[in-house]
Image 1 (cartoon, rainbow, N blue to C red):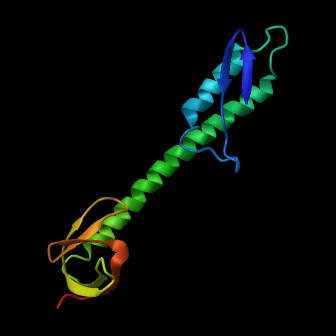
Image 2 (cartoon, rainbow, N blue to C red):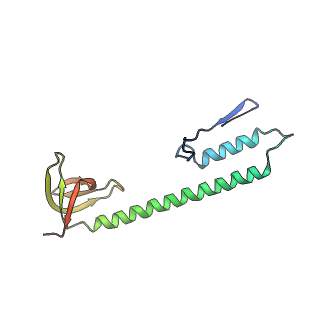
Image 3 (cartoon, rainbow, N blue to C red):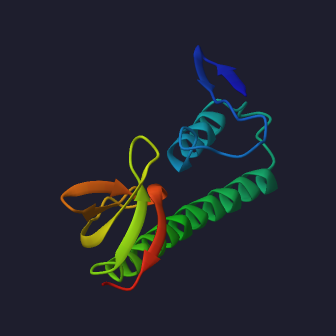
Amino acid sequence: MQVNATGQSATATTKPSGLMDAGLGKDAFLKILIAQMRNQDPLNPSDGTAMVAQLAQFSTLEQLQNLNTKLDSLVNLQLLGELSGLVGKSVTYLDENGVAQGGKVDSVLWLGQHSVLKINEAAIPLNRIVEIREGV
């Protein structure tokens, strides 16, 4: 979208899917809305219902972003709880060469979605774990 008047312009891009990404969030939306209002023709103002619809979209976008943040926190807490249950269990994992190794989980290094298990002083990513057993 391009808005031109009085030498000022505001430009925004959208993804082909029409979804907003992190680059076009609520701040960008507000800037575009302000640019539209600032650059409209005073003798032919924009439709008031269009502005109300845009404000409703902005409110919806903000609530969805807040919901997404809360869901991310919930997923992280659930993952942390599940990973803490692995401490003391015996696991089989694939080393860097794809060879199966085994050991007891000594601790969890919490790195969010990319957490690792400490097994025999080695940091093993979760995606390399192939089996989990009760501690021996």
